[in-house]
Length: 115
Length: 111
Image (cartoon, rainbow over all chains, first blue to last red; front, top):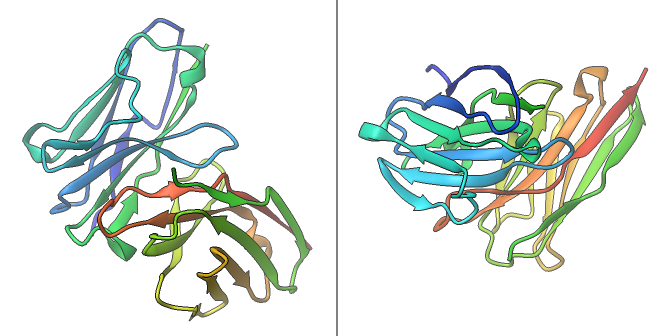
């Protein structure tokens, strides 16, 4: 079974620029999550999708962050404009309908550096 | 809201046992997890335990759960240098599938 794919692996941008990250979940996984992991901290949920609908985006800074999951498969997370404090690793995860235990799989993440 | 706390750092000698501790606040948590993160890598699920269990053993790993005190621990027997990493405790609910993570414990294994 292929894992959760994310790209790019690394990205360096200047503040006020825009950036987009892509995630392809495990085939058949209905639930997709984007987490932000700032250096020295644990991952924090940004947004959760169930198929192509948003379940929880309460922690997403909506003035600059947006995410979509067209057709309920791939997802993109965008930041526009980026700030220095957005430097972090952005992790995508997916889960099956059961959603707990071994149903969670994380991708390797995209490391964003804003300079 | 939910909160998960861990100590920041643990140093052990190769061959010793490591014990990493975690406390959580949400008494309705149904699943508790341990993840491992090596430098530059994603999160690797090590093990998890249901909230109605007290203990789970998986090869060198032993998870102990004290639900009354909301305390979770991960014991690694015969710790190896390859176990050096950051270990994250996380909690989840059946009804809320997103996980709440602690800040991680950095385990350093000295030869």
